[in-house]
Image (cartoon, rainbow, N blue to C red; front, side):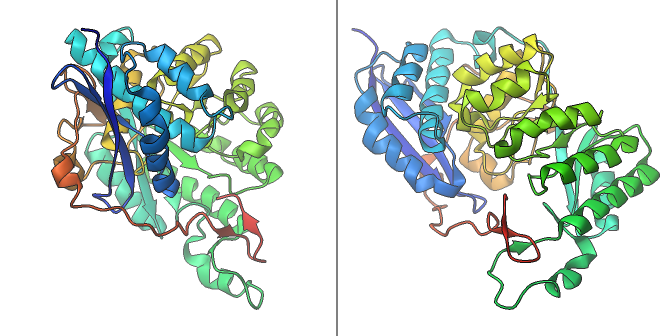
Length: 404
């Protein structure tokens, strides 16, 4: 009897208070199923609806071994394509199918992707703080744990550190609510931050920073140039996707390594930056581009142009999504670094089979498939909130909305 898909389900859970979406694909072979990450935290209910009402009837009865055909079919099914809701739902299915393929073969997914080219995955950690001392102390703690690369942020994205009272005085009467910041104060504080970190830790530690598209293009280029003496590992999301054409001017004026991509959904957004060698690291959110299938293709394209991978790995990726990233990292020769937000005990309980962090490297297990699962009964104890995000409402001192 031919193997077929018999059910597709969305599982929503929030063990850390962050909505996560997981897809479970079941097959006609009793006990054979796969899981994948479809997390789009800011619109999780919409993704769950896409999975339950559109993916499920489209996929039931199909052969789960035809991963490429299913990926292409789902992509064009709604006619309009490459949007975040469709791509995340598709990612959950795609990763689940790779999980099934590994289980059928009795091999971990990285073996199906070409096999290991390294034994573990080097990661970078987040050292945020409201003061220089706080940031430095967190960097110190990571160093003592063996972490080799640290992202440093002063006062969060676009943060102003101790200047927030000054910022409050700049707002106009009747200013809209939002996460306010001052671009000039932010730029000056970042340069001061890196000067302080290099003075305290020297240059044997790799440091990076996330602008989070909070600056206008000329401001971002100036900041990249001012940071050159501090030898960054990379400067992340210096520009918004809408201003990607400015990367050419930035590349011509600074040698600071550039990383970009977590907001990309469509190949037409990232391919020009790669083929013209305007960035050093591609940082796509794997579920936002549709899962393992397109991510592996993207890694191969990047390899041809000397661009390395640094997949997005924040708290709003499920542990299943993190593991998918790691299988890609282990099997991609042009891997650069992996963002690692860390896994709490609650996440490890809900998602048995989580990877292990040791001295700055993350290790996956060698179980067939992705090697991770979800405890649905335990997951149900952590319902997702329907509250809308507030941090995406970022504003400049005069109240103008800014890219978050």
